[in-house]
Length: 256
Ligand code: NAD
Ligand code: ZN
Image 1 (cartoon, rainbow, N blue to C red):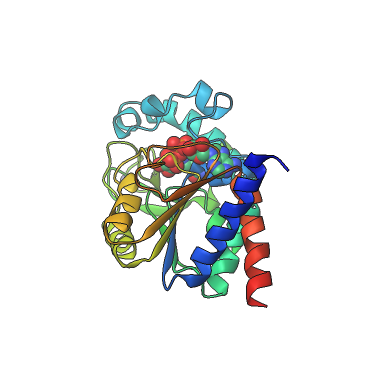
Image 2 (cartoon, rainbow, N blue to C red):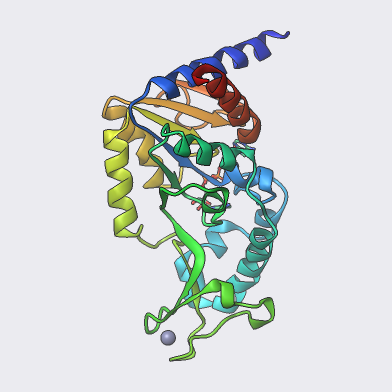
């Protein structure tokens, strides 16, 4: 076995110990956890985000200026999300929660895959694709009633083009999500940071708050991030589905 694989196995065992011994564990997830479900993250070179620059298409000013244009991107994103299924990483986190080993999932994702995998305590930091809102009059409706021919959807009251209830760049984080996430970060003993580059703020502050409050911070990511070597105690490098499945195998063996 190569040194690299040996190191990975050692870290998987270390994470297992850390999870089993922690009295309160939280996780912060990002777009990387849904990549194995077929939804691209912002950093990959191909896919949706090579054609739509997030700074241009995911900014609230872009939506206000030209909602039809932004809906071209949203339509493709919604098609991808509708066709996606939770992967072993989402399933593992739901199982950890059922075992009483995970307090909450704080997610930057808007794809609803944690809930579909069975997680109950999900804090949606950037809102969700589940609702559509009117920036004109506040009208809301469920996105499940939306057909793809109906795009861009319009408000029944005032005719404005509706916006998915996700947090665009330039918009504030929902107050309740921010408050709950900060509290979880302050109170935890272990924070698992999975599939996020942690450069989008204020979500990127959650691991820092956890660390300052005395928690261990463990990253699972394909590559080092801004947290690696400074905020996180260690990084387990690889695809989240594979790493979390191995951790779950170790945990089941340990507590059976
Ligand atoms: P990001 O694109 O900045 O970073 C993704 C991270 O995941 C990278 O560090 C990458 O190395 C890692 N990664 C990629 N594939 C992985 C895998 N299989 N296993 C483990 N790690 C993997 O994403 P972010 O940090 O979440 O920030 C981007 C913003 O974009 C967020 O606010 C999020 O709301 C939004 N977004 C959401 C979705 C979604 O809902 N699925 C998709 C794209 C973007
Ligand atoms: Zn309206």
